[in-house]
Length: 260
Length: 354
Image 1 (cartoon, chains in turn purple, red):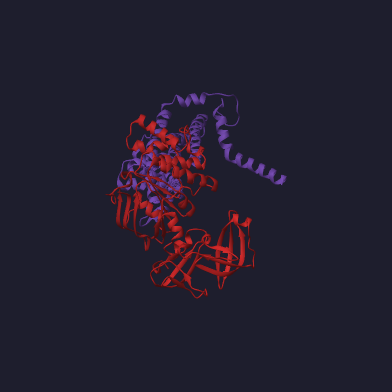
Image 2 (tube, one colour):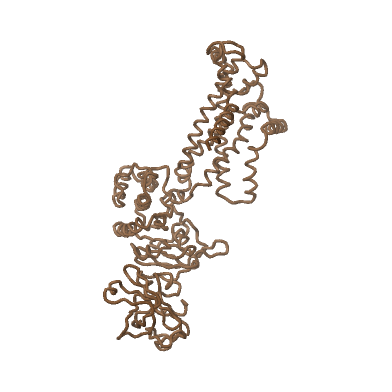
């Protein structure tokens, strides 16, 4: 018994090293004085200073945030309607729709990105922020729907009937009962949608127009241009911190969701 | 005027008639129960009164007004659900105040009325509690207060005590009846538990397969069942004797002797229903209309009464005797006894109820 525990512990440690070592190394070297990636000479914030004084970074951050916000709003509204449709109504083709929701989650992102580009070219839509948003939202809706659908499946609808017996009409019932009860799930789904959009590189790369860059895009393009450099480490560390922050919010929302 | 009237209500789910031509008149301030086994249509009937289900045909009237096409939120009813359906994102005050808010009652008045109704259900000072901080019995009372605070013309209760354990349930039965008397509202109570129905109701409607079997006071349905189903569904045990009635005498193949009954009509097929506690048991019996000879087969002590199973020919009669009689005399298995009852104490189930 004790032996197994020890083995399990060592195994777990290795898994964590495997998972996090690259990131830890990157974060450490973002604080390195020297430009070299080989040796850590002294602690320094100069790479952070370099990126934060770079207007391109600020513009990209701004782009990432507002694209993420729009994508989140669109995904929530569409995902909520989709989840309501598949959990509350029965209609022809519902099982097919139910399965189709999952497809964006399982197909490779590069395929999604390429298909988006093909569609935009075919429809002659000029590439830019709008095409990026459509591209993100089209796939994030699937994730939002899955999260909301799971919550709705376990939701006792008699609270809505109770509201109606107390004098609430359909609209009042939706806004005062259904929505507030769903709120933690909506929050969790929204944060997931935002994180997905904020982190996305491949779809953005394929669907963006000239001059419109998001944070992952400038990380990628500077890596492609000049290889790995310490300021890139700093930029990535910054991007990870933001994602991490949202992940923490999301986990808390999900905990709350299970608590209700 | 009647509080609730149902005229020939029919509701089908697919091919099954959940409610099959039910007509009811429920009086003002009455505690009325819909009693029956699961799937008998009692909950659907209640939901039709609430407007949560639409009948396929028939008319629903509240206080004389046809509300068949009026949506739930305009019916001025209150409802307590089986699983309570309290709003999880609101505290006690917000839950109870919800109906008043929907009616746009001024804030101060809401405060006063919530306070008053929480006093009625014995939850004073609990306003700020969250729903998941309350015990089952307290949640029950919040649901009741929420439904009552709007002063509905009729309160519908759908097996509200089902989830509670026995002790609290017994307490809540008495409590509910008291609250009903205090607020003076018509209560319509759905249950499969005859004890609940018997304890609280002024009248009971017994349902089976979507149809009304009998409507009457608890004593009526207990002592004068009008169908074999009601006779066996209500109460713990009943003796049913099947036979033909001719000139006030029931003859049956099982028993060697004719049984005297109080029933004018002749009938080729009918049941005589006799409750176990109606039957006397002794070594010698006199002055009763029907006296049969039998042998004691089982003696079961049940606390407040003793149950004897007495074999008479091919039949076994269930006889209940008050435990107090044990002080004087107790019968043992194998003993020869006489059992008997008065002709007017048995109930005849007409051929339509066979």
